[in-house]
Length: 384
Length: 137
Image 1 (tube, rainbow over the protein chains, first blue to last red):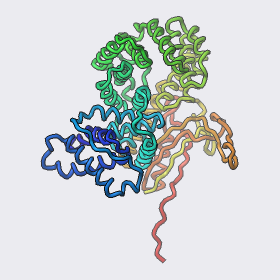
Image 2 (image 1 turned 90 degrees about the vertical axis):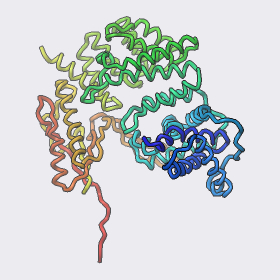
Image 3 (image 1 turned 120 degrees about the vertical axis):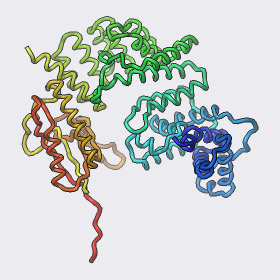
């Protein structure tokens, strides 16, 4: 990565944050930062400035003032009154946090907030974000522009809640990695930044959850690209460094005694990580955590996952009784029933349910995985 | 170069293909893996030859929707799961000739199925409409 590329990714969002903090509206601030980065490209070829961040802040601020004075920007869009920069050093951390809270504002839809966060806080290019979402660059540019316009109508001084930020970061983590950019990796990077700036235990909980899930990634896929279920994963391929870090962060968070849903989810992931093999899993303790999670976040998805834990602790029939209480529209409902019926010994029904679950699957990888499960049981029941 | 859409149907084609009647969930698990591997390999080799554009699988639950009139909700019919002819997915290629498009479709149709025999599945080949050429006179 060249010095300028590094600046775009690391310094660009911080400079943007400084301008927004000074009262410049989001879209104008970004224009000014882009122009400052172009200027940097011209001036930094020969020699990097001593303090590239301060250089960029000054350059972007000048360009913003020029734009305001010339009035062109005023004609193009309404600009917030520009205020004089306050005295004192600029650290950048607060600005990044402010940006994060703005980009994850609850007036934006989840996907729009993720795209804007990647652009404004993550420092990714629109092309990179577009490739991650498999949409044309022009489409993604428009989505980001509309999000910025929505924010410009908001009182920018009123940021969203921390919970909104965490939900957007978790959504980003789960978007996966189809393009050249690994969104899970970006989500972890941003959550690390957030965790470094705040001692909120739920931020640590989310970071721990991401790290513990990320640790399993090498074992989650076969060399041919097929999905591997948690119980079948080769645990020797889990990333032990990430597991250790995740558990350490989680324990520190739990010791603060302010439990939240991400800490509870991370605790469940940590119990899986602790088991040397699927058979050694501490299911009774996992079930306790699901009860806790259900209290903190009573959603049908949690109920369904809890039903799986019930099946492990009290047997498949108890698990099926728990599933019966969960709405059938919840994703994976049929797949969980198939699994529990197989464990209960009803292979014919399980085969039928796996096939039905494959037809309802929302991703190719899950569809293929469920088709294989159905095929496996069909072979089992067909052979004498 | 012309782009072609190679359409896979759940049910479709001039007459039922042999082998198509056994649903995938009743194959041997290894046959399922081989079939998916074949598809991935085909996409990779087309990419290698500069002919691959995109490929996409679709959910079998299709719904027909039409305008319901001014101020009214859209009219829907369905969802149907595999009861009508629905598109299962497509592959888009950019190739030099119609013959080449047919060749690729034939390879796609030869994907292994139950008993590791080729599926002989009918693939619908449709050319993209192109830009108008410059005409003198």
